[in-house]
Amino acid sequence: MRRRKKKEMGFSLIELLIVMVIMGLLAALVGPRMFGKVGKSKQKAALAQMALFETALDTYRLDVGKYPSAEQGLQALRTKPSDVEKWDGPYLPKAVPKDPWGNPYVYKQNDNGEVEIISLGANGTEGGEGEDKDISNREADNEDAG
Image 1 (tube, rainbow, N blue to C red):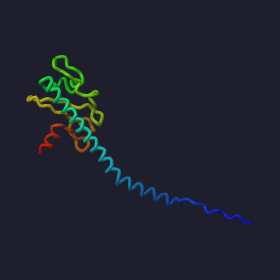
Image 2 (image 1 turned 135 degrees about the horizontal axis):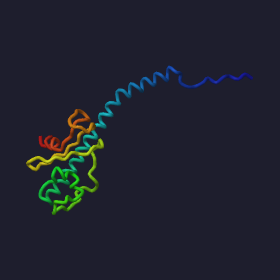
Image 3 (image 1 turned 60 degrees about the vertical axis):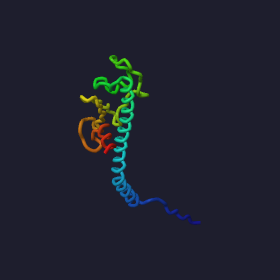
Image 4 (image 1 turned 180 degrees about the vertical axis):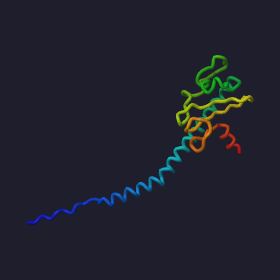
């Protein structure tokens, strides 16, 4: 009896290379779009956190009569400032979170008593474009009004 050699099944090197090239092209086309969405989702998360801060700040203002000073910052929503008597917090359920990129939020108060909360974006420094762009609750409020 003769034994026939089984025809080996599998992919040739050329077939594997073609599949890898196709996968590389797909990754090159889809990858940037997916990573762009990650950046946008972090910006939306920062705006959502800012909305939470605004609500807590409004409650603080109703209790105390004014917003926290720039020196007191957002920490006044968790810990009673020493010079405040009518504080009825904490106004946030947990510690003041960092922005989605791991940077602290910047809290400012102008001469009119208006407050601004800023995320410095992915790079953590002022200015920038795209994912590095600064995000402000006041800009978001203006977009909602306009």
